[in-house]
Amino acid sequence: MQHKVLILDFGSQYTQLIARRVRELNIFCEIFPYNSKSFNVEDYSAVILSGSPFSVRAENAPHPNLSQIKGKLPLLGICFGAQYLAHNFGGEVGASNTREYGRANLSFIKGEELFFEGVSEGSQVWMSHSDTILDLPESYELIASTHDVKNAAFKIKDENTYGIQFHPEVYHSSDGLTILKNFLVNIAGVAQTWTPDSFVETTVAELKEKLGNDKVVLGLSGGVDSTVAATLISKAIGKNLYCIFVNNGLLRKNEFENVLDQYKHMGLNVKGVDASARFLKELAGESDPEGKRKIIGRVFIETFDDEAHEIKDVSWLAQGTIYPDVIESVSATGGPSATIKSHHNVGGLPDFMKLKIVEPLNTLFKDEVRRVGKSMGIDAELLGRHPFPGPGLGIRILGDITPEKVRILQEVDAIFVQGLKDAGLYDKVWQAGAMLLPVNSVGVMGDERTYEKAVVLRAVESTDGMTADWVNLPYEFLQKTSNKIINSVKGVNRVVYDISSKPPATIEWE
Ligand SMILES: Nc1ncnc2c1ncn2[C@@H]1O[C@H](COP(=O)(O)OP(=O)(O)OP(=O)(O)O)[C@@H](O)[C@H]1O
Ligand SMILES: O=c1[nH]c(=O)c2[nH+]cn([C@@H]3O[C@H](COP(=O)(O)O)[C@@H](O)[C@H]3O)c2[nH]1
Ligand SMILES: NC(=O)CC[C@H](N)C(=O)O
Ligand SMILES: [Mg+2]
Image (cartoon, rainbow, N blue to C red; front, top):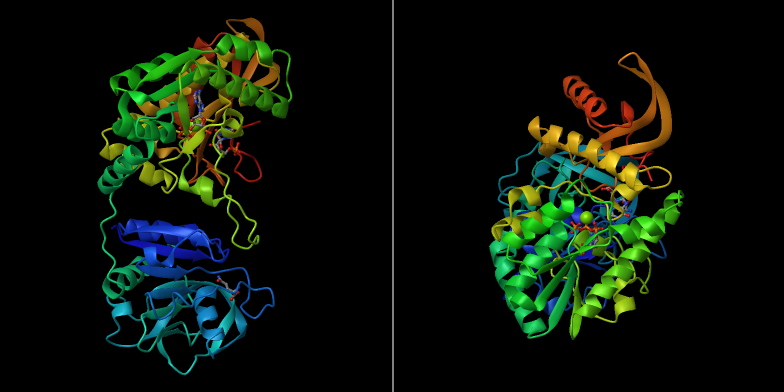
């Protein structure tokens, strides 16, 4: 049995980060809302309690039942989790005199403490709290302090239970990972065996067992998630996996042909469906952003459904849903009714098609999906691809969409992206693309007046697309790219660079 760690979420903004850090130690972990009924404590080797926006003193504060956990399994409470362990077992938590946010340093660490092995006094820790533990319960032992927070870390005598006021999961706690490792590996004895290779091995075995001789259909987008999902499932059931790659007419230049070709070399059973004419026909005349998105979504579902019906006796729909898709839809403090949206990827598709869902990547973060992809030998270029939105160029052509506009934007985008690759900038940028504006502007080319389209180049850095900043691309690169676009793309006489961050702007223009 694989060792795994349970993280109980009380609604902290950092809960996902705890999981990422634990995974960095090659230890598998899962997050559940503290009041979830969907986990079995017996399945875990250690438990971590997250922080929370709630004060333990508030009447409506989360009140987890720890009777099966505390004293029975190694347990670490972080911030709210630590306060809870103090407050509810005979200690006292109150409002702190000075609210502490940000940097602090450990000014005292109890000697010979396994929990702090390799951590020295002075070590920087990150704080984010307005309550503080005023008094520890009788059986608790103080093991570290900062200048302002006396009870910064404690352990319970004769139990493997620890509490810390600071956040070891954030990057700015410089020994955070060491502390988590001390707790999980040295104290709890959890094995560091969770690697991409072991994930592939166990997942393929599970998929074989689950899917047997059933047929599975999967939408391939050319993106990372669906490609890695397809490769895993294909390893388990081979030709019983039917992949469908839809050309919605809004893909990048030559993308449909290139991606299909790439998939053929990977041994996947893929059908390319060129529905571009159908999409463009349905989109004709629509210029409202939401209207366009709805049409693209609907026609995608119709096309996919038509194709899936061509496959006899298919009973599963596979999706490339990844962990953040799942967690983002779970709310720890939203009450017991909080549900997980399993249909995140292709809104509505599963209900509509009455197929069972299989999502082999739904416990992985994006960087882990890439590592798993790499361990299965998927091409590095494919794994390093920038995200590309499902509605494609449809939400980068402002206003109504025509075949001519698609052609222009494909050309511009291709020059920009190839230019980034040639200049060694592609991997330094999180996402890049071009927008076609619905305005003409006056120019002069070869002594003649022109009145043509303006395009926007956008390149952003980000980690998850939720927030983003524009990238400081070298002027020389911008200059070269602009020249090349204006000189070679007919219909464009002006190029501008988008210098807006998200928020307040979004990455896509529509
Ligand atoms: N052109 C397409 N043809 C077939 N399926 C598609 C297409 N575009 C998207 N999909 C399906 O819809 C899902 C959601 O697409 P989206 O781009 O939102 O997801 P994603 O998280 O970026 O995944 P990926 O990395 O696989 O693109 C994809 O995982 C894929 O299953
Ligand atoms: O698959 C997708 N379907 C969509 O409808 C969609 N809209 C935006 N995006 C991508 O999401 C990230 C954030 O984009 P925004 O800042 O424009 O919201 C960026 O990476 C966008 O490319 C989409 N991806
Ligand atoms: N980050 C936290 O867990 C904060 C806990 C509690 N809400 C406080 O302000 O002290
Ligand atoms: Mg995609």
